[in-house]
Length: 118
Image (cartoon, rainbow, N blue to C red; front, side):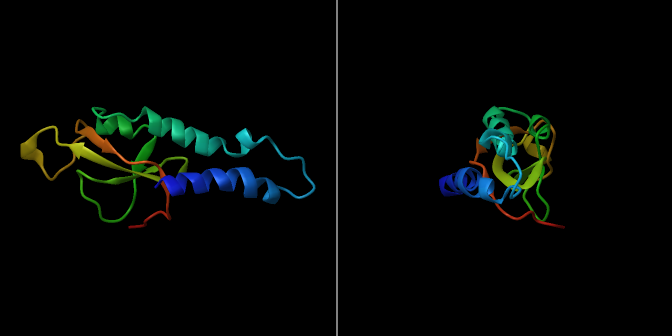
C-alpha cells in the first residue's frame, strides 16, 4: 500500500505536468495534485473511535459485495482513491447489519484501484 501512495505522488510530480495541456501554462504541482492532497487530509482525519456516519462525510462505500464490519470506502471526489476500514459493532446483537453509530477500529492506507460496480 505504501507503493500505491508513492506511485500516486510520482505520477503527480513527474508525469502529470508533461501531459497537462501542451502549449498551455501549467499550474503549480500543488494545484495539479490538490485532490490527492485533499484525500490524504481526509484520511488523516479518520481515527479509531469515529462513527460510521463521520466516515461518510468524505468517503462512501465502494460498490460490490462487502462485509458491514470490514468495508472498502472510496473518496467521494475520486472513486479510484480507496481505503479499507474495520468497524466495531455498536450493538453486538445487530451484527451483521451496519449501524451509523458503529465505530472505526482499524484504518488502512489510501490506495488506488478501479471502482467496483454493483
